[in-house]
Length: 52
Image (tube, rainbow, N blue to C red):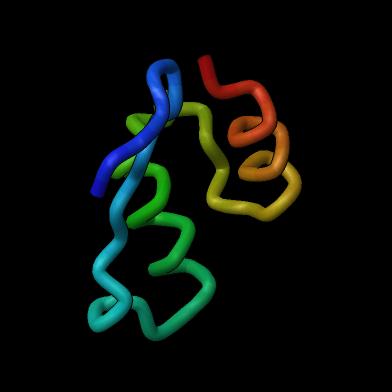
């Protein structure tokens, strides 16, 4: 998969996602979120809108 320079691409294995918790956990691992990520949608939203 090609991405524009400066663009970050993250891949999740949908076969392993069977719950909201698992989705957030996989996303946090793929995007290397810090320990304080509380596995909730509000924090997830804040983190993905501030990716650098």
